[in-house]
Structures are given as structure tokens and as C-alpha cells.
Image 1 (cartoon, chains in turn purple, red):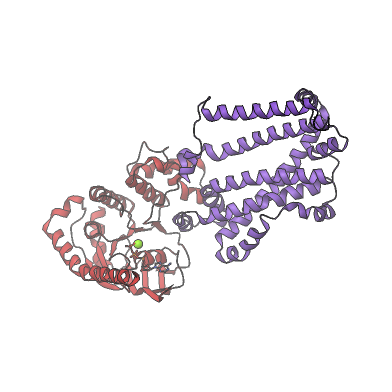
Image 2 (image 1 turned 180 degrees about the vertical axis):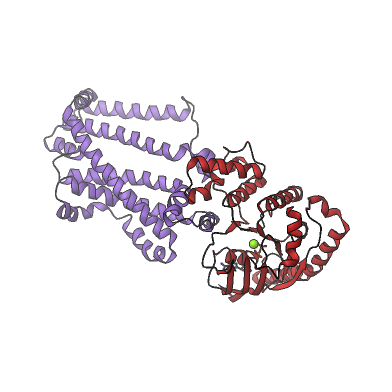
Length: 262
Length: 284
Ligand SMILES: Nc1ncnc2c1ncn2[C@@H]1O[C@H](COP(=O)(O)OP(=O)(O)OP(=O)(O)O)[C@@H](O)[C@H]1O
Ligand SMILES: [Mg+2]
């Protein structure tokens, strides 16, 4: 665990060849995009010029209702992550600490884990309605599996002597969880939460694009159905940037303290 | 003063009410080759304040016995009693120091040593103060805020010892606590343990495969046989107290070592023959 913590942060110099190639790739894409837009080869509005998209992005960022929708989605993802993450952690710890339960139940986790969770959406609508409830449920289901699997694996990797130390001092179950299991498995657990956050965002947005009247997913599908392509691209760009930001923040959580303590 | 009471403790072992009774312990393990008896009818008593060393070749069942007395292993025959009370799980008056590296890597030295106090629910200020005391006792002052990864193996082992001492157990159980250390560090840490035991008037059960260590520290040495683990001999060590590591060069010390080595050599060579046979059989 210690090694991955140390190795995962290579210090890249600012203008390394890799960075230059990356910049070149982005530039090439933008130029091609602009060329296609100007050529009129595709239907005019499907590939709007960068200038138009830029203007739509600025307009979006100045729009108060956009922030309201963003708040709705963020809230749904947050609650989904909270419920799914905590229950995933609890189930993972239980399965990881009990060999019989682990053997019996983990097969289901492995089968259900990679199943696209959107197939549960109709059921969730019936259970929780078309409002935010069903979106939260989608986020919850999505992030439960990676968190539970990482937590179970993390539990099994705990140095068994540390568990015996806790038992020899007669720690209660709760003390074992909070003072030994969780700190000992924090790296795999944080990794699970990171994966969980990613799929919670996907699950929630996907659900919003299917059936809803609020949230970023709704805005995107709304822009699409009113054929407001610049606005749709603007939404995608903003979403893309936000996802990168969130992922970087969660990644930090895992890396920072591993240097001295792992 | 403690040397006087302790010197008297060994002969009294059989008469004074023992603080620890191990009575007819048998432990079997299921292995792929069938049932293996790791510990076979081991019985002994430990008097209050006594230092008992258990010595035996690798694989003879010492750690198994340690875990049973510590209440961490069940499914055995026989009975363990602490102050007359039959053991069911880890006992409050027993503190264990493990053979393996056992410090919590995510806790500083202070927080490691304060762990049992945290479990007991002591307020933070008191925990830190008590932890300081035991860190000082094992000679680690100045390292309070270091993490285990920043310490040497010997220092980490001292942290583990301080952590167990901080729970102030009546009986200190140690499983090869100096196993991974070099001879010099081992001798000096042995001195430290004797000093501390004198100060705290603890009963000690030390598991080791090092004869020098056993004779240096113990009032009695229990020699175990190899597979199944039984009591081969109980050797009272009548060397004056207080002892320090300098005693290892005395004649009397040499005689004890020679006697125990005589017993152990047979068992150890049986163990090695076993291992070789196993290896030979396993190879295609
Ligand atoms: N959980 C287990 N399942 C099966 N066999 C076990 C188990 N634990 C221990 N054994 C076996 O019991 C025997 C005694 O093991 P134990 O760990 O008590 O030895 P030891 O005397 O402490 O050895 P060492 O000095 O090397 O630490 C060994 O042969 C070991 O393989
Ligand atoms: Mg052992």
C-alpha cells in the first residue's frame, strides 16, 4: 500500500514532451472541429463553431437557473454517495470479516457489480417516483458495488496481527471498526469511494436524461430536444471540467496522508 | 527490594496461589495431511511475580500456546485459569506482545502506546501523559511524534512493548518479542524488560527460542518438545537477582545454557529432520 501511495504522484515537469503532445492533440481537435463547422459538410447546427459554443458556455455560466439544476444534481449525487458509500462500506466490512458470509455473498456482488444499473431505473421510478428520489436511488445502487467490493478486499488485506492486537485489548466491535479496520483499509476504501463517486455521477446523470424535470441531465436532454446544440455542448464541457475537478479532489484524499503513515 | 521478593517467588511457585494455571491443554489443527496435534497435554502454573520462559524449537507450538493463554484461540481441550477464573476470551489482566510486527502504521508512537487507554475510554490529556510515561520507560523519549515507518525494528518492538505495558496487565505475555533483533539489542532490551518487570511487579511469560534470553530473564524455563508440543522439562534458574546482561558470561549461566541446549538439541534436530523429509517428499 505504501508503495502505490508513493509512486502514484510522479512529478511531471511543466513542458515535458508528453505535455506538448497533449496540447497538440487538443489543438488538432479544436482546429478540425472548427474546419468541419466552417465547411458546412455536416448539418449546420450539429457542429457549431467554437465561438458559438464559447458564447453559449459563457451564457450558461451567467445563468442562475443553471446553478439551481447543478445544485439538484450535486445533491442527488451527494446523497447517493452517502447512502451507497456507507452501506457499501458496512457490507464490505461485514463480508470481509466473516469468511462464511464473504464466500456466500460475494459472488452476487461480482455478478451484479458490472451490470449496467440503468436497467433498475424503471423499478426505481415505481418505488421512488419520477423526482429526485429515483435519481438518488440510482446513484446509491451505482456506488454501492464498487465501495462494497473494495472494502471487502481491503478488509482481507489487513495485517491479521493488528486485529489480534485489538482483540487482546478487548476492543468492542465498534472500536475495532473505527480504530483498526477503517484506518487499516483506508487506501482501498478511498479508492472504492473514488470509483463509487464516478459511477454515482454516471448513474444519476443517466437517470436524469431518461426521465426527469430537473438536474444537469435534464438540461442536456432538454437542450437536445429543443435543438439548442451550442447549449448542449456548453453543458457537456462544463460537466467534463467539473468531473475532472471532483476526481482530482477525491484523488488527493487518498494520496496526501499515505506518505508517512502507510 | 523486588529482587528479594522475586528470588523468593520461584520456590514458592507451587505453594502460593498461582496467578495463571494452564491445565492439560491439547490443540489440534486440521491440515491437508490430516489432523495435526500442535500442543499435547501441556500443564504448568505461574506464581504471582514469577518470570517463566517457554523455550522450544521452531514450530513446536509456542505461539499456539501463547494465543490460547491470550484468549485469542479456542477449540482446545483443557483449561486456562487466571486468578482462579476460567478463561473465556481475552482477559483483562493479560497483556500480549506479539511475535510479528504489530505497531499501527497509521498512528504515531504516542498514539500507538495510548491505544489501550483509548479503548478503556480515558480522556485525551490523561492518555498522552500515561503514554509518555511508558514511552520513557522503554527509552523512546523524543520519538513521541514519529510514525513506526520512521523507526528501526528494535524501536518498533519497544513501542509494541510500551503499548502493552500501558494497559498495566497483571500478567505480561510475550511471544518472541526480540525475535527479529540482533544479539546486542536483544540483550539490552532484555535488561530493560527485567527492570520494568521489577518496577511494575508483573508476572511474565516469555516465549522464546533463544536459550541465552531464557536463562538471562527467567525464574524457571519450560523446555518444550517438538511435535506434538509437550513439557519436556521445567528448569528452575537459581541465579541471583537483580540480573543484568553481564550475567551471560558467568560459569553458572554457562551450565544452565548447556543443560537446556542438551534438551533442546534433540528436539530441534527432530524438527529439522521433519522439515527435510517434508521438503524431500514435496519435491518431484
Ligand atoms: N491455524 C493453523 N492451522 C494449521 N496449522 C497450524 C495453525 N497454526 C499453527 N499451525 C501449526 O502448528 C504448529 C505450531 O505452530 P506455532 O506457530 O505454535 O509454532 P511456534 O512454536 O510458535 O514456532 P516459531 O518458533 O517458528 O514461531 C506448526 O507446525 C504450525 O504449522
Ligand atoms: Mg511462534
